[in-house]
Length: 384
Image (cartoon, rainbow, N blue to C red; front, top):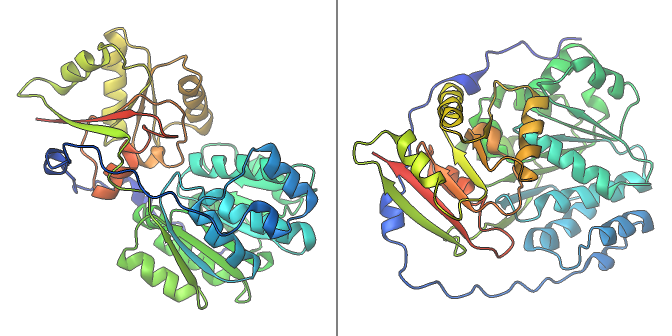
């Protein structure tokens, strides 16, 4: 049965929106902001009466204090409510939806969960988290993403795993081949809905959600609430409870700087920055795949070992590049915004915007890759 007609890859369409953070950075407070009031959770993981296997896996992860999104979302999902979570990357939302859904599936093996993410990297990260929380539970997952051979995914799906985690394009392809039966999924999670829709998957998401059983539990997570996001949520959620936990957009642990090229080629400016002491683990954001490949070639000729991740790279290439960067074998990683979603890398010292982001939200997401876990970080934006 063919579920969908193939659509052109709208993520490749050129968009000209830009956000210049110059005024924002110039207007930063000259004195550090006051420390935010610490959130005091109402619950603990032990309060949720999780299955002993799940509870042991949570303890093995050294999860002790609930984050705000976990504290407010887990009880709702355990109660069977539809949930809208307005939350940025780094707020703990993956555990917020995985732990209650794993609990449901351990108790009732008829519970099947479909999780959709905008990028391969984020889908891979979610599945890694699932494996950690579901260890020894008898629950299994199938990862369905592009960039890798589809035959292995077809094989895994034939075992009817309890959790299917994937990107909309590959899920569409598998549905068109008749190996995904949407009617079995009584739980669905859309992570980073705004990014999924921004990448042009409105039609695919609408068709997938329409094909799911009406009697289901749904959880949608988004960093921003655009009119398109609101339309999708209103069309497919039943009396949802909205939880808003936005990361602090002032990002007090990150120093922000505008670097003017003053007519100098930006590659030369970037070269000079990378030679400075302390630029030990640097994430550079560019706008296009072609531009990043050229930049990687130019930096390589100048003696900088770099790797790049973007939509034209195979999944194995992207994962290998990430591993080189994570393990400090390469100190410079180049990435587009599309490839950056789901990047969770420790100890990034600097983020450099080689090209301007499209929006304020993209800017905050980019620079939020540094200054994590209460460490200091630096963000620099190159302008002409």
